[in-house]
Length: 322
Ligand code: UVW
Image 1 (cartoon, protein in one colour):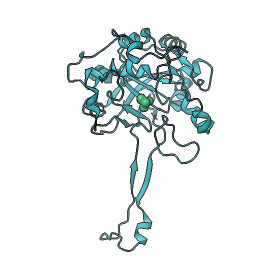
Image 2 (cartoon, protein in one colour; image 1 turned 30 degrees about the vertical axis):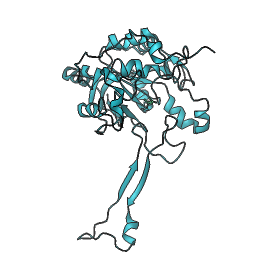
Image 3 (cartoon, protein in one colour; image 1 turned 180 degrees about the horizontal axis):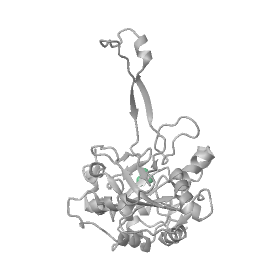
Image 4 (cartoon, helix red, strand yellow; image 1 turned 45 degrees about the vertical axis):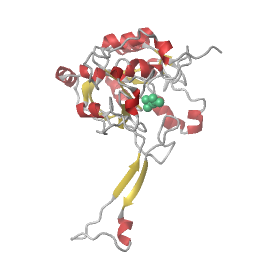
């Protein structure tokens, strides 16, 4: 087997880059494209007033639990106060007899539907915009999720249903597609992917997780379906000025590049180099069914990840309004 190149070797020294485009202190990357005009453009795609929440359930205890990148844990939610608290001696006593419930939770910030901070991945010691990777030590000082959360993400969303396009309930393990496939799927849906569209891609992979209901089989030879790296694909994202890529997979791209064997090269090519924000583990099936039913594939997309100071990412429940 030939040796796996480094990410830097695969992408090349002249890899497409948006570093410096929005100034030396930028932490929003391609989300800068989403200005007030884009909000108003998005609003024009509300026709019926239907709303779709795009987060998966967090901390499900039935079925397979929550889908996660290997090595992460799902939310550990714990009761701190509940009615049982007031059975105990020394329980708090509030005038009027009020009882209440409180929870705590330990969560991986990437452990549910989430926005990745632009500093979430890197290579060659540099994050988005050229920030030093050592600025991640202890707490993500630069390009954390906070600036993304402070901004909020609002614009025209376009759903490309790759699974439907290929006549499948879900794509197979390791099945790939690229920008040409996205264009072909868009054409067959009768929609155009326009500059500054929030690109939402359904593979059916989340549905597969819940319907398979067998984590062992799901993680066996773990390889998700998804977008696959090529320089042309990266240039396509750059010239389309895609601000945000949203998918129903855990990592938004095929886990291992089939040509080079490099893991998650698009995280580096799109997020680190172009500043494209990634949103992963989205629940897209209900939205896709509604879009297919009346053949309308565009909507207002609204998302507000949690404002986690220095966060590498943050859970989110985006809303599509159509
Ligand atoms: C990794 O980059 C490993 O994970 P995610 O898919 O959460 O971005």
